[in-house]
Length: 391
Image (cartoon, rainbow, N blue to C red; front, side, top):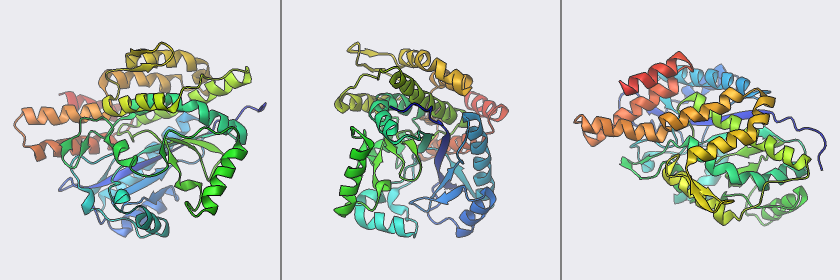
């Protein structure tokens, strides 16, 4: 058993979609100069994604949630300012309200060329973005142990993050349609449970030697041991237009891992539930977001999501205090009060339709809201965006 407290360092990666400010559609062929300028301005923290209409940012390894937040603010500002020079704007949403996937082109890079060749039609539909949160767990076996316990909480994090209610101009009826697209890929979903790090390593080595994958980066579970860093990487969440929402979710994930570590240190562990049950809550998060509630497996009953979050706050209160992120974790209550991005997008769409807008005009209004929220500076800027939305 690990005796040394893990670093619990944190890093956040976000993927954005690039939209044309005139048409509000995705920019399928953004200028190469845009990426080059953004990479230079960010010191290498901006990189290409599978599709040319996407761009990715990543913080450095951070000692605190607040440090990660500050870097996200800077990175979003850099990408926004650079994109504006070319008549474009980033949106931190997991799907575009009306863009068509068959109009997009993948980035000409060896990794992406191989993905396109291997996954064919499935990967061509991948016009989706996510947020990935890395938390430093130095001990290999501890990392694998927490990998088997943390999936219980993944639906809760997904529900708070939902930002993909539209697909190709239609309201899907789901708050996170992104997962419906992503789950068509192999090696996705709830992670497998391993007894030890050595078992995990043997499994990966078998897949590599059989020629199924080149390395562990081709495993796209909702939560995975990072192939590049000694971290657990949470991948289930949508990307959030409002930075404070993203930070709250990242802080919760960090606190959940320390909660599970504390239990282990006391020779306890979170109760194991079959992946079959966890997938039910995952589906409810995908379908309803923070509405309609989830199953509390201990009670064997449906419970309002707000009750589950309050219970989670109590569980991680000690950990939030340890990391100095009590305020960031508590921001999840604000998400519950005003709704997730998916809720706001649908509200914006219905409001525009009620005012006489056509289907396309209403979807453009949603894009404009996403552009404004993504660009909002936390604090006064975010408040102004939300007040404008409710005006």
